[in-house]
Length: 339
Image (cartoon, rainbow, N blue to C red; front, side):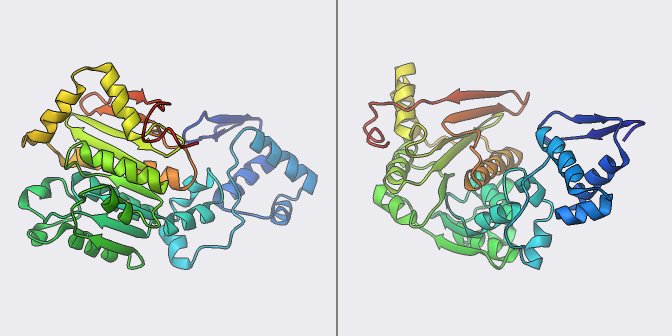
């Protein structure tokens, strides 16, 4: 507040200035900022008629500063406190308590518990997701500890999925974890992992490209969206998020890349036969993994993810971002039958 102006700072939008506000305007905004109030409560606190209160609320709503009122039952005391700082964000998209429960009931498959997968798991657990299937056939190595956030020195030699499950249950003992110490070897293996899943995060990279094709075919068959990512610092990539019937699929994407470059298949063949490992960093893994979690969270609460049908490439030296949209291919043999 400054003089005869009232400033409303809105995250992600233009700020609002109310000039010459009445005392009741200030009181109303202070009351709304502190929590939910019934119309009767507002009338009593402001000493105004219902028409006057409604007029002020309508003006604020027209200016786009009111969120959605929660009508669902309150969260339990633990969740109400644990997610108190998250609920205002969810409240901009709908009934915050209902959306928080939606996150708690979601079932996410994480394929790969390495640098990207562990950060994604940690971030999704922080949002309140409580059902995970984690899949990886590797054990923790000392060289993993520069970027794989769920493990410590004492975990070296332990199965990654077992260490991941221990971390999740220590973080929130209400989390349900299915640990699969298995190597994906075909489409049917992926389909078996998708039972009841709301989304899959593809954070594994072996076998290169073939794994993406298996996951794509399985997710289309089971109608489950999945998201990919990668890193070769200083460049990192988030997405695309492939959503059956709504975006291009992985094969649509590959067909587009072949049209754009005759060398695409040569590049894929080289990636599949080389043992070279590129640089991977903890901060880069953290950026990609937490952005993956943000995209999955938005998908679960009904907000269209930025990476839906698009790959977002970020240069960590300059923070310049490039967006590459991928269109559905009407002749794609894998997804053309979808509506």
